[in-house]
Image (cartoon, rainbow, N blue to C red; front, side, top):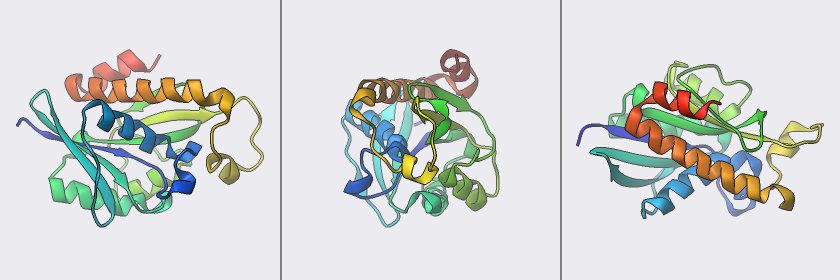
Length: 188
């Protein structure tokens, strides 16, 4: 095996959050697991699924902590699987991107996303790739917490399916070709 990648989908654990906007990161890694026929196994602070892709070991992770404590699980995963920061990818929701858009960055701030903030604090760096998945609808948002913890409405489900698929294709491309080429292809 050439190297290992840790692909982390952010979300909140539990059935009541399963289809909420905040859990779009979970949805993307679930889609990848389904595509590569692997299933998640529960660990102490996270669930993982593994598969091989182009001579690379891919580890999918869903932290089982709440969003604002995601850094603990990610830090444990990096240490356990000996992952370099360049081979870490965090997939999170982004309230500043319209639903249906994905944006890959090689590094950057948390941008108000509490899961990313926790990871940045836990790793003591902003220098890791992240895939932001847009969740903003067409209406103005009066209560951010209520909005991100709300489920997608029926009119949005087709867009959700498309963006989850787009996110999984972006991850596949990143593993195969790297961050720079993937940013050029998907950040349009």
